[in-house]
Image 1 (cartoon, rainbow, N blue to C red):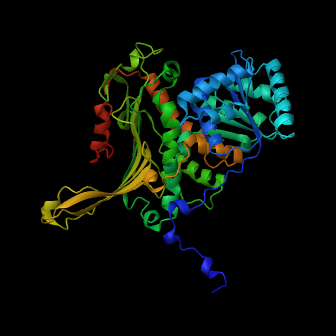
Image 2: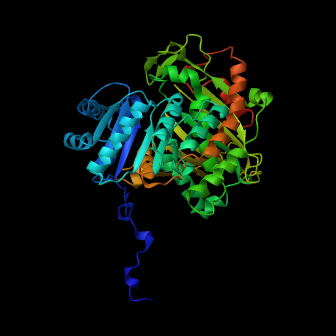
Image 3: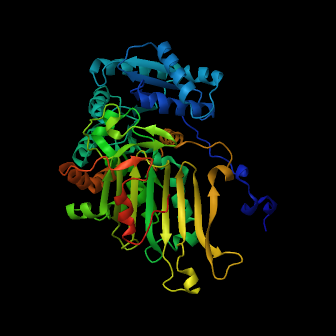
Length: 513
């Protein structure tokens, strides 16, 4: 034994609070938000940035510039954002902390992409770099704008020489189909290197999504079961109890497939089904995820008609309150055929997942808000305990992403005082209970990663192409054959009856209820 052997800590006795949190070590920066007065900026980005600042994650020198069409001064912008922080801050609002934060805020107005506006922007960046960052020019552009505004902004940045050594964050959806996504990505790559482009999907910042890899690859008991010989089916539920809120115009153009399936759902399938990466560098992990998406079975019109279900919510009740149907929502056509619900069966045609169905359902105005991944294991093909066990719940591993992040393992035990009676129980792990310290929200984690230059949880260009290749046939088929039964499910239900039929005909049922 060495002289310092007494200093070795046995990990069996570590408590969560004993494990040091990795320091962010973010360098001084300028963050420029295009669409700085819009809903995304006011309700999500600014409260997230405020919370990070309160936690001490930001350096002494940083600046945040809001850019929008509305004319206002720095003071007026700070007043607007302070009101938003008071209303939307993810954590508790603090007046003194808010004052310190907004002192770093600035504002520019103009038409995005116009050369005169871009010149003013360039001058403001130079001014703030000299004044608060000692000449440093670590600049991050956040495009909190509709996709159609992106080309003009990117061209304007390039023409003013503002792309070198900068980073750009792009919100989903990237395009409205594969062709438009390729065009948009070509515009981005003409101005930025791929390593400078951060395509953000907030689902990838959630702890349980990140923990999928750690659960598998640090626990041999799971990885050795993680293939078709042991897993009967995989179920993914992305359910929201809210409607489209104030996004009627956006949602009626896009629908559930573009809004959720093309990105969130396919990213989750990629995380669940990927092979072990050769290391935990960003591109090693992204290489494995794209292999999964490229292995998803192609879907023709016959397959789509048989194995995919679309729906649109009508009126109903959510948590006891009466809510309108989709066609009665603001800025939605009264004859809209935009789907707000999707259910389908996917196959990943590779050796690990051959013949294992991936059942997916996602939708608005469903019974409750929940995102879960359920891996259901195969049953024994014999009855060890006779006819008393005709109905046995299969083992299942359930990863809950929201609202309460955690992992549950379902297995059978003997029911007390009963002869050969099996009873299903859960072994539960809850993030909040095990790690009571303050957690990072998904946006907080992703913004920190961007500032640090970590691309692991962001979407690469070839992955965008691969995901559109999966969903383009679905969108084209559904848009060419309008449904005749919309609305076909009540708000507050689990969607149309066909979604149950889809899974029941294989002898399964949805585990999330």
